[in-house]
Image (tube, rainbow, N blue to C red):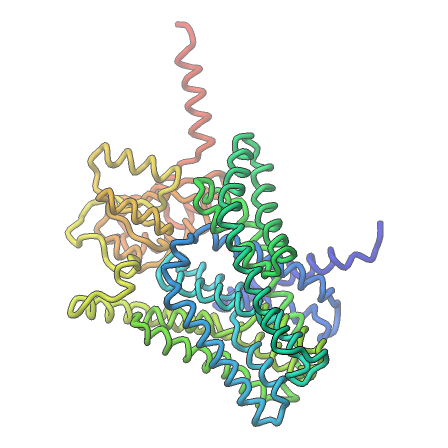
Length: 564
């Protein structure tokens, strides 16, 4: 057996240390991703001990970006994307311009060449896909209006960066770097060809992909093989991402997003999202580890004030620009704050621009270290921005509800049902049903047949809209959030029916529900004895185990069939 296994060593050490430091960060009441970044620093080339393979780690991280964007696409639709184009397109373009100018301003103060200042500012202007989407998904915001704006904004940034990566080499000599000076006609032709490829990619995906992708998954689903279905999902996500990059010259992330968005129109989209989730989470962790490996702590001592200025441009300058742009378009303050917090960091494209800039002689080593240091520190700061936002969440929502009552309905009020109380305060002795998937749907039908009053809490916006259209009380959100349980009148409810399969999340919400209403009867589902014990420890009243109930039913059938 060969002893030189950099791929295995990098993956194993990265995941093991991410687990250790992530758990420690959680114990210290900090976001786990901080632990993942520390794990990356620990196995990076700038700290003693084992050194992981940085180029390999970057490629593994790219797989995480692909799977994450594919997952977002599964919960997105072309209609959703077009619904936010009026804010996402101008907003992203203006925000990129402002951040780039701020970076060029710092470069001018430091006496850098114009090209170096321009590329420095451009690298600070584009947010990290993984950080943004991780923050939105943790708070179940991807299917809200503000989440859709943030994702649409991210897609526009992605397209702008694709164009930049094509044009920068062509403009290198003009910016003061290496490369042949090109005429105006050639530059315009290059731009036209790049735009043409992006348009061609979108057209092919909408005309061909819309038929091919769902057809493939439907045929595989008919085989009844879960293994083949999972493999098909991964093949579609990774295959279309790679094909989009090599054939059309767009980014992996953009190709994966469109593949997921087209698949979202299929009935199999929810199952596809479930099957890709474990790998998506694992590779997202490797992304943060790979970012940590790039960080040289020496920058903190060598250029502390320059690094501070860089971080301020990313976290304050760029976020403030996004906040003002969103408010200028008439959106509520909560939406503006969510988007500005989402964009207050940099990531994947910034690293690509650093590599490109150094290869063309546009960036010095110090400037690239500032960008990488700014990326690490902004990613570390970002969870705390969201925590601060969460702290003021109740105040913002109450303020906006009052403003809605006293004035005209705002843009987001119609499409952000998570901010609008839907359950009458007079509802008493009802059931609260958590999750409306295959199990929850059957429970809902049974409660309806029994004429029992119930409230559904679901984190898929489309399901919530459908339930409300049927006259069923439904709330969009995560039941682990105490505010969501309170909006469902948890204090006066008689039953809590936990139909979600995730026992860990179920345990958290059961604990919150028991504190809010000690007398409530809580019925949950479990698949193993360990899950049953976990739920009982958190205060569940009864647990239904599918396998056990099936075994009892079969045994009862045999017993009833025995001759007398």
